[in-house]
Image (cartoon, rainbow, N blue to C red; front, side):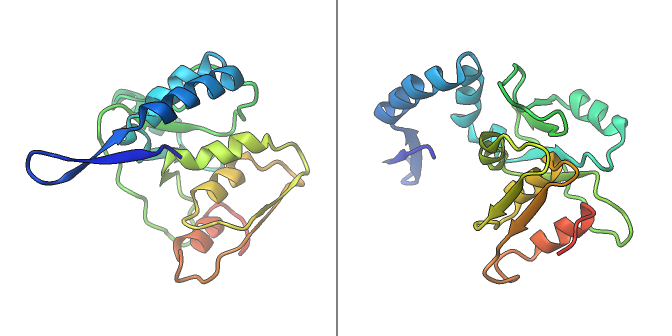
Length: 184
């Protein structure tokens, strides 16, 4: 999580500023852990408009035309370099220019082609480095981006358990899993 300081803007509104001490610590720590991939991750993390509206393709049902359309609109893959472990089934696109793709409505009997989510939801998924047949217990499933990304990485034999305190907390999560072909 990036820490921010609030400062007064001339119009009287508060604006966020990155805390240099924290950013320096992140640079030291994550340069060691991620190598060259850290600079790309850092650029994205310090530009919230780039990661707050990511498009995660549904590996079970997306047309290749959708991927072409995202490239045409200026979207690029989340990590353009390679990471030590990055599942090929995880196709997430971001745009450097603020642009929102409309969310897909749930249609009974049809799988969604993509999900809109905060790209930060993918970081814990990548950190887990899931392998065939592993089980995951997600005790903090709301608002659902992480759990949806876990489903995109799931291999035959993998199991995902998730917990929501109430369906009111995030009514879209159970619906998202039905759309992925899972059971709630």
